[in-house]
Length: 98
Image (cartoon, rainbow, N blue to C red; front, side, top):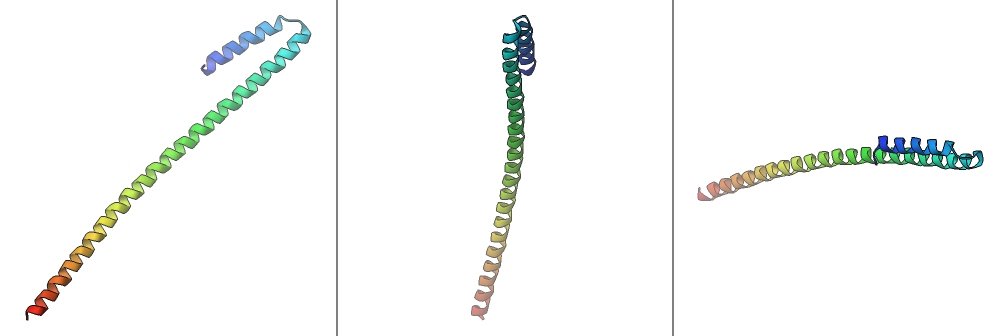
């Protein structure tokens, strides 16, 4: 049920309650007010949860970006080490031939 439908139904209920005797009106009006309060609290909780999920999604995107950058950097450094090792081996071979 969307927000507008809820408020329309609650207004209808309040209209029906107003046609009842005073003793019943007070009891049902209190229940309707509790229902409104619970609805408002639930709406706020859902909104807070949505914000938390949005923040979590953004955090995950940053973490994935960081992981990919770290992997690229790691691959680049490994390549540099391999090239350095290969150059050192070639230099050793040249010295041995002399």
